[in-house]
Amino acid sequence: MEIQCVLKLRGEDTRGGFTDHLYNALIRKGISTFRDEDEIEEGKDISSDLFAAIEASRIALVVVSENYASSRWCLEELGKIFECHDRLGMLVLPIFYRVDPSHIRNQTGTFAEAFAKHQHRFGEHNPNIQKWRHLLTKLANLKAWPSEPW
Image (cartoon, rainbow, N blue to C red; front, top):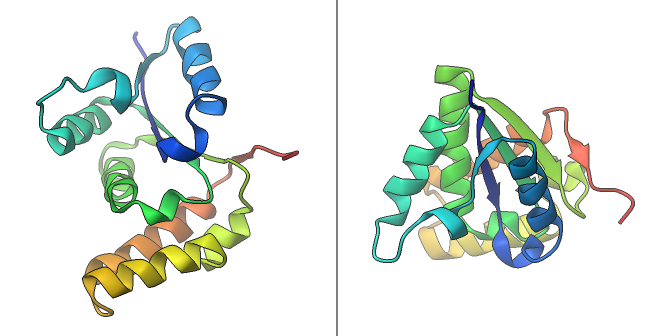
């Protein structure tokens, strides 16, 4: 049985090092791994391809870096991941890359800054902001692999 995995990350923070090594290790172990930079063709609809890949996966590895919450796309994808977790039993495995899970859980530091920017951009009472906060807290409460020592 083929294991399908989706690897989600904030690219600028981790690409070219940690996540490349993780991706290559998964491939070497025979785990079919979707990483959007490799899998989405030029001119294709990014969101539908990403959401289809998430739906098709049994495992989601979510690499959370200090700027993860600044990406609206990462937060939307996290929503889809937890939808699949709740509906289909997808295994969600967070990896905290150079970030303390308590900063995610309590949304302090760069996470607080990111949400201040989202509130300014989308409006203070935008329902997505509260949803994203809840999703990050839910993620931070899962057993995870911290990438310590930094």
